[in-house]
Length: 257
Length: 233
Image 1: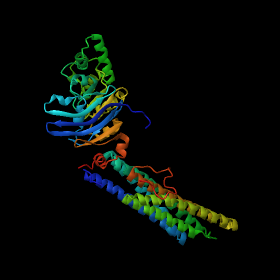
Image 2: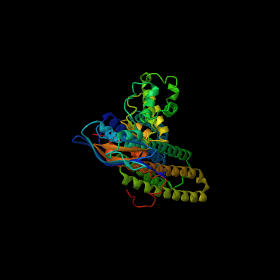
Image 3: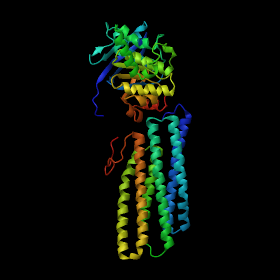
Image 4: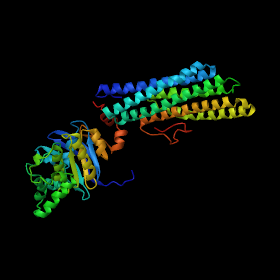
């Protein structure tokens, strides 16, 4: 691979504690810009915990504690530093969850929400951005005539794409996907995967998935985690054909445990 | 290898692997019998070998079918993926070796039905055939044991059969020049020698797949094995 890779985000000796329990054990890993990086590993390996560190989701619960750093480039800002506002972090780093979780509002208001939080007040600019985000999330054609209907009226796959549009509206640099298709049927899954492929033209994606074929299909890089450790990180094609570590081999061939 | 979480998966993989070995055994027997038919002039045996090729073909079809089913059902990855991918290629090589055995049997039948003066280098042909059969058998052993050292040896041995082929060819040319009545038979022996040389090539291919299964490195067309006594792991 002769392509020059730029680091978008970088975990440095990142440990994370749920109270006394050390869920991440000093992880150092780079997330490359405009690439899809997949995190795989068995339940409880820390992959979702790791993902959530990137937008300070853990701050919502008392007793949680970070050690180490997550640097966001190009400004080299440590997202975990004291004094960094989690809301600011979440403007730059969007998140899409396992189950579609649209707000109990209209399609339009769901996408406009982040813009309003950011203080955008121009009706015209909001309308433009909502349309653009829905276009980017490959949802516009399906919802353009029902923008002011409740988001809950959409199908599961459409709701998930709406959540992606909502995340895209604030022009994030990094998008976090936490098993974004585990509640969707194969067709809706394929459309989300296709969307990820298009989105990486301009945004960096970090995805947690239990579906190894999905990791193989959508990602450029894959990280295998186990019990809070990063076991192997590498180019996806190589990791799935010729992993370096026996633990990775055992996991991806189903010989785990 | 650690057991798979699904026992059926391991059973399916093991069953495919052992059937590849069974197919290899059948193919080896086909070559041996074809060479025997050539040496002894047993035309009935030639016909049996010609007839027997359909069994080899049927095994190819059935193994391909099982491999594609395993891919669809299990989506093998890493070592399993390399194994299935290599098995599909191995099966193709085995089927072609079967075709070569059939070719040898057909030539043996022609030679003996025609009668007349025999071109003598049958002994050398038999020697080359033994070398090819040994390569095939060792390559199958290496496949069964996932033995890369043995596979590297097989790959290097292929050069010996190529040399032997050229030597048989030179001898035959001499015979043909000395006694043009041997031309028909000599040409058939050329075809047989060529078939043996091809069997060596196929065995070498299969040995390369063994290295790919174990190490994940593709040594085909790299010249890595040629004339080098060792290969860095």
